[in-house]
Image (cartoon, rainbow, N blue to C red; front, side, top):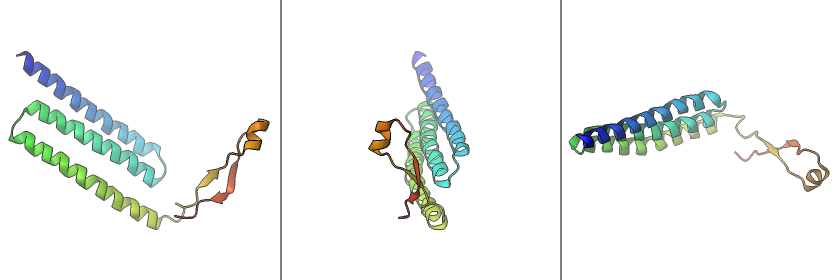
Length: 129
């Protein structure tokens, strides 16, 4: 009887952890402004959230054929998610003209020694992308 309660507690903890990661991913997607940053937040929450939810279901079900099927679903998601994310990010990199125009902050030793703040060099932009 005690083993069933421990199994239920572990499953509940894994399920709640997965839901927390997915909810945090929603806030991360809404916080960022660029598409690549949003994709990163969504991919991390998606990967960890699905992992913990399905592991919670495996813990709830116990060792059985259902658990094997759920582990295969985890493996499929972990193979498919990075590939689809990479394809979407390549599309974004090819179609976004403003992606290569990032401002670079240069730190100079003289300005730090004199007590002035570092300046933003708007002329130096990375145009290699």
